[in-house]
Length: 460
Image (cartoon, rainbow, N blue to C red; front, side, top):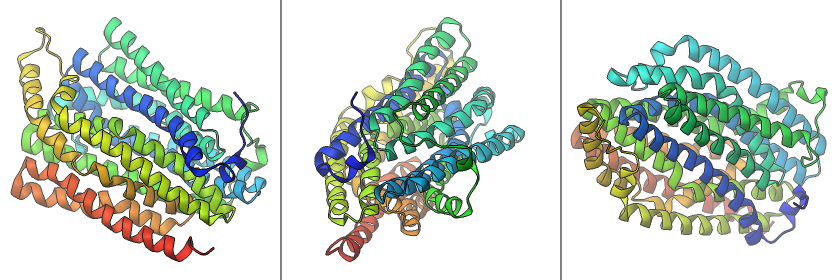
């Protein structure tokens, strides 16, 4: 593999550069999403649909702690991209060292709190009835590996900021492949049940951290830090916090949504309806991987060129990213509209050995999935504007608009909708809240992004 440098972000044609950055990011997200997707299939077929619901209950807590690493990673990477664009290498090194120290301190403290409040958090996030025990098993084991995941997510963002998308892709592939192999061994061969699913995932996190560490210690990375770079710097920490807070707020709202959705759906239809949402949640992560890949590929390009004052390239990258993301989003939309029943069937076992309870739960899930999935993904073709718009402001260091636009869909629109509509429309009110929130947030983001381009990116 030929060695690449971050300077290419400011010189290569935007179209080919976006593909070069986005394809590895998309592949990495695809493999990671396939891991979650296939992992859910394994769990559903080898343990049961209630086990899928149990994992879904745990995700908000573990994802929130891991999101601390992602937030620190994305916030710091915005600084690193702009610092490399303006040839300020020392600021990039100091930022990276501070990212590592901050991630270790914050995630370790959160894990200790998470373990202490285990019995309170699981029911709060919907782990009630028969879901509680498998959720507690999974939660306790997963939490030990979450700091490794947080460091991986932080490191992955920095790797992309260096302009090394292929290595970032490998960092996502390694734990995913390991998790699937260990799923087979621990769940199917050793028959460890939920313990096996949890240990397979945790082992994947550890392997991911091992690879990320290897990358930064090797000659492939431009960021060779020393001990002095780990000393926390107030200015750097505040900038990381303001930009990373955008990602953290998004993940925090996501956790709140899981909490609300699991409880609302449990009250409407019990454990099987929670399992319906668990499957749709997996599809939200899996099906949109190319759109998220374009978004991740776009951010270092926009950040580097903004730092280098190449505003024409920033503007071009926005338009190109929206065009690419919208195209792949439409393809995803078409597939999901045609095959929702077939997709749901992948998660459900038809084994004769299933208990009556599991058979009834599977039948309920199969009946409710098609309409729910079509409604949840109804507005997917237009979400590219919202995702790229929010990502732009984060990439160029404008924390306030990035935060507000990031929260428009889930915080300002979706949460009020799911609190109101189910009272009048029942289960249908839950699912129809998704496309309404998508449309409203896209309109707001589109208007704000257009104003930003006309005001700051034209004529400079």
